[in-house]
Image (cartoon, rainbow over all chains, first blue to last red; front, side, top):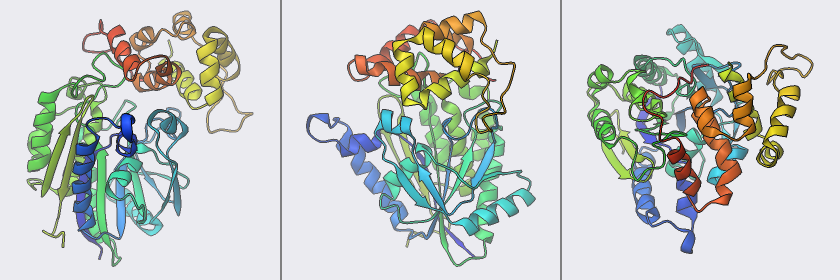
Length: 287
Length: 119
């Protein structure tokens, strides 16, 4: 059976690539500390020595559109091109190409459907910065095959938070039951409080620092029950109009497990949004 | 009222560099052209298979034709789509972050709950 060697939850900040590669006058004052934190976070994945990465993210109206919108979608392809013209334009992100772990995709689809999730699939998926950003931060050599899993945190009606947690639990069960001698890391990215295209956007901090503190506490302590008691589809509008991306963090809490404290926690308070990085080693590993 | 069609306009223009420039320079003309030629195209479908019923109402058409992004916010257009396209068109005319902050300021009269974006 495959071994789940690391569970990683992170924000996906599209400006990291440009900030970290900028030099001279173009380099923002917060870049050096940001790079230091990201490199320390990267080490938490490196030491788990994964063979395969399951990548949970969300399409930002790139390939998936309102005429045919899946709630949860699994990519099943031998390759995935990545990043789109408007991400090059706005964030300076590079075009990328990933290898797919197609047999694990097939396994997740078959077993996931049988486990009660009517998963959509794509045999030709171009992935966006919700998945390329964590590759840039955590595995910049981009040498591992992936299984991309997209969630709808963007186009209402959305699945409820509890459904994200359930999917996370199911993904863990499927990975651990996959009959392959592989070391698998599950990496998912979302947001803390975030406002995009609204009156609270691009402030000196995230739009709701109080929510961010609470959210980091839930994730770090694995407090799924406490989180589900407070977080609803309606409540997530209050911290910022793009905060439903927090449900991908809740999915990752489901992967990590109820009451499971994160083995690594770091945050970085930036303008616009707070960065947050978490790693769990399910088997006390990392060795 | 069609939030879906507003979103479809923003989505299809944003992904096409030529349309982005055309909409920046000639918003009214671009909206008219788009409504005639693009509004009923089913994306990811064969070209010959189009819809027959999609059109803007007057308020929506005017908001797009005047680059009135606060009005689009009020109509429930998806804020991510609006922001992304308007950054592409107008960030270049401002200091770094200047456009984004002006954008927030022009929406400052909106209180929670914001207009519904469900389509």
